[in-house]
Image 1: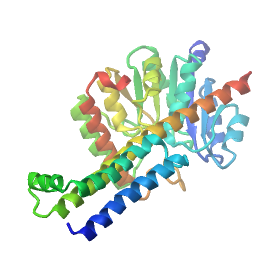
Image 2: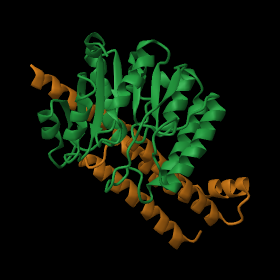
Image 3: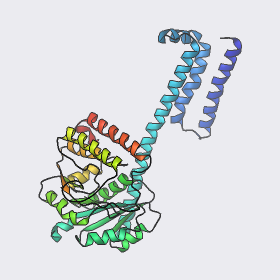
Image 4: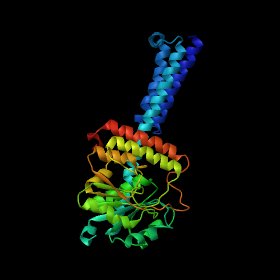
Length: 113
Length: 241
């Protein structure tokens, strides 16, 4: 990696970290949901500072270029984050359904009194 | 049906924008039964709730549209809370002939089955389903036959009668709240409930857009396969979680 690339990647990682932290600080993003995104920012920084790791992982999965490794893991992480959201949405939908039913039943009880 | 039995029986009817039909549906039921009728108004934007109330039904108003299964389940939750022992589930659009209520409830009262399913393809009746729908029904009939070992001629029937044990099961999280269907029959079978099909007459309603229209049949078929598959994967004991 050239110095140019390193500086860019480092700034990107730091930028992501700062953005997430700022959003948590303003309560636009819950701590619970910030975790995975912070991990991405931190991951970028770690890979820039510790190049041996990327090369080792590249050899491990049989990829030729380190860029492939980065793209594969980047996509995998995005897929997992989306899956995480789908699970959350399923849970929220069920809770909304239960609450809605509960409200309708309580209102019916109230009209009966 | 004696009035003693009727005290314990409730008819649960989910309704979404059925203002044109709900009064005649309720009046028709009244000619055959004086049991309590619960209309679950699923966030209708028309006069469904008011008309149902005027016709003498008890109305549960959902604040917004939750969908057929969830509306139905709301009615079952109410039935459970109010201590009803038996419930009949029917559609609000008048498709189900109320003269069959007695025949559906009878085996439940006698303890011959936990749940009865009204079938439009058993015995009398001249219901003609559109081809694609019919093909789907036949497919799911075969699957049900293989899994439950019983002949089910009309797995998509929304005209059912059940005892309290089944009402309890229907209020659990296991109940699919979008399109409860063939998968429910398999769940019931795996939970050890006994079911029986009873011939009923259903009318095809002119001008009525089915719940299963447009691209939905594709999604629906896929969902049903998935639902049946995971039900089988879960095996017996896990449904009540």
